[in-house]
Image (cartoon, rainbow, N blue to C red; front, side, top):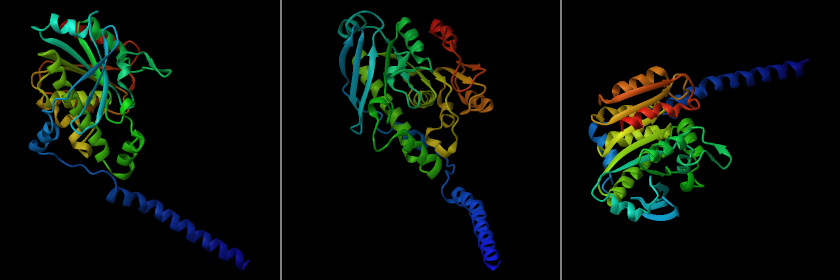
Length: 318
């Protein structure tokens, strides 16, 4: 009997300690580990995306097929960048440049969702997995409307994956350990890579009319780039995630008020787990440009089949 009493007493003590830890550990995590919001001054906002912005890479184009070229360059920090460029008509790049040398080249730049590579803008599936974002349909629409179609991989994506920095580490470090530098660095440097791409395309084609389109994280990157680079004339941002001041330097809502002249279309979902209806509305309202349009869908983060038909009007107006 005495042994049973002693065992029960130890069990109660153990359970009490466990319950106490369950109550205290979340508080410790919230107080000392979890992400805390911060603010950026206007100067800090400008500095984030102006650094290295004048870097002009040497674009290397390797012919893959009629109209299509593999595009590679080295970014400002020595990082390898790979993507694809396709012309809207059946001619070589050199013939295109000669024919259009005195014209402005319309360039449509696709920015992929997190975890997706640049080939999604051309292919309806990749390694047996469907392109559920349907951006391949948007790419086809861009080519049909006489745009040069270009896309590159984001940092840590596709051809730029790193074994020591998988996306799971980038996101888990932020969500569980309060380390936002990997995620913010990935997004900021991806925006800078696209700035450098535009610099290189201007060297290649001369005057350009730049349109950006991006899905999810790609929509986020598109807004950040358009808000910090006046060379971007139009942007289609599709279901960008809602981000707040816990990651202030990559939260579009902190920058889109700088979009005063661009044509801006926001496509959002009413049941998106990454952005609530009111959050999407606030983002749209924050855009300063009057040339803007908000299209909503009764779906989740993956928009319904055929949603791209809503963009036919955009291309017709273009």
